[in-house]
Image 1 (cartoon, rainbow, N blue to C red):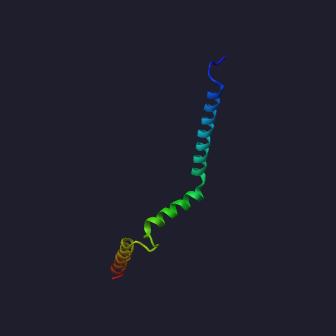
Image 2 (cartoon, helix red, strand yellow):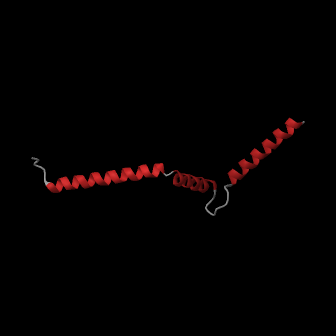
Length: 79
């Protein structure tokens, strides 16, 4: 038989169970598309706003510039 201590074997089994539980949790998180989409939306919102919840000024300027360029292109194509 084995010359290993039963307490060591039990500790190894418990460590493997914990690792398996963590792996299952990670896989479940990857498969939860709705939760991942919410996390991504919250991340984008946090990156697009300042600490007080207002839109970041550089994004507002970029959006205004894009609208202006698109407006000029439409105006130019209709001429």
